[in-house]
Image 1 (tube, rainbow, N blue to C red):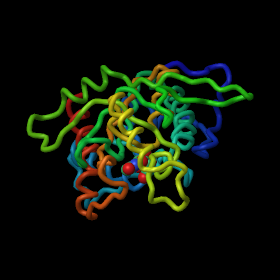
Image 2 (cartoon, rainbow, N blue to C red):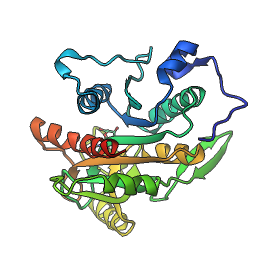
Image 3 (spheres, helix red, strand yellow):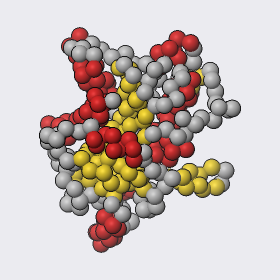
Length: 285
Ligand code: R2B
Ligand code: URA
């Protein structure tokens, strides 16, 4: 982990609303794996699954304790694993990643792995497939993440850690019951227009012909899914030298439709698949 040691605030993390004390650092010492999900409910559910698997704790008698004194993000610890929420979109995950990484550094956790466990819209693959990302693209199909500061735009590399990907894939049992494939992802600016949907609240400035051509280019780049956080995650972690990746189940095949038409049960079943892949990995570590 490579951190801006000279300048970061060692006493207070604004986005976590956290005053850093010895006691706080003790709570976070010894973390090796950080699992991130958009929703705070999902982070809590995952912490319960982790406790069931690793600590053999009956979920009926166990409520994980949220370690962050803010309403922005929630974070739970099970052994050497953190389950933390990152909110929706690149700006939300990026702000969280700064505070989290300072905290990991101050707590002496220099060798953490960061894994985003998510959902996504698939491109030319069956809903329910789990995608593990190699490289993340902006919606303009440039591989990288554009940060604008001081009137300058800089595009940073967005490669995920391929050794981590290989370890995650190797840890899966043969009878997983669903497909897991490695490919590229697009991190869009929203769920609707930036993912070239037609069913948002305002009219798009493109038509079906544009969408078709765009999907053709996407296929040539081996881009398998749309989501909203992977460029920030990949660029931050590459720059901070933190091994990171994203595992995201697809909820729709965007070549066929815009709307997610799964029943609640199907949605729940599919969403749990990304968590299952990472549970398998963590059990193997
Ligand atoms: C996937 O799902 C969310 C949008 O519904 C977003 O956070 C993402 O990346
Ligand atoms: N998340 C997204 O960002 N897009 C989808 O289509 C589904 C989930």
